[in-house]
Image 1: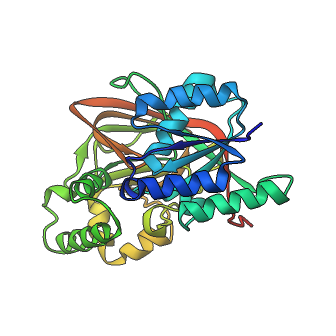
Image 2: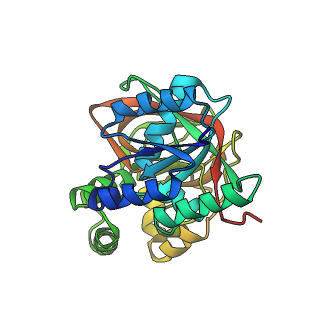
Length: 320
């Protein structure tokens, strides 16, 4: 029996540029070990997963970006529950590949497939790390979403801008530079306007009804290796929670590298919170990002973010 099922998203950024080459290489490397299914849109993912589940697949490779991974995991859990989740192998094929960096599979997906087969051929057990998922409930959606990272406010606006410009590392660096210049010259720019919504952390309402950004995550590293969280997530128990308002951002602007990489502790004013938690409720959200995928609505929506199930991910990174 083949132990691996692979979902290949041909529309993900890297795959779209090299579809035939990437697919051929993956098939050549994993052909003895894997069933490979191409999914041209999210509606085709459940059909492939039902086939894998019927065949008893215990290792699930996902070739695409963070958005593809979120779609696949959400579909799997909504179909079959979370009691017996397969080991996930993220293959770097998308625009945003945060989970790939988290587990150390930063080479191209061909190298990652080779590493996977080496372990399957020569080791009795795959090396894995465990991360929790975030359960996202939004009444405007027809199903529950499961994700590793949820963002709104400034980061939501930035990622919309990034997608509009075409994505990629060069675009990201250009827009980060532009954003930095705007922050120094014009904090009244729409990018830095606060958004209005009531926010509850573990059922305690936060004192302000506007904020610049919120980030909820179960991974340690965000884009460009940012390690902004002061309290790390614990799989299945709590996630990291980062809440920022404009007054704190304005005062901390000149120490932004420390904010992004040092995991600064919360400020007593309540304008900056860097905690962990089990549940976040946001009333009146204007739009958000789930693992790189933008969700935008004409009318405000209420969001509930809860601690979700634990999942094992193939990793070559030493956690010690």
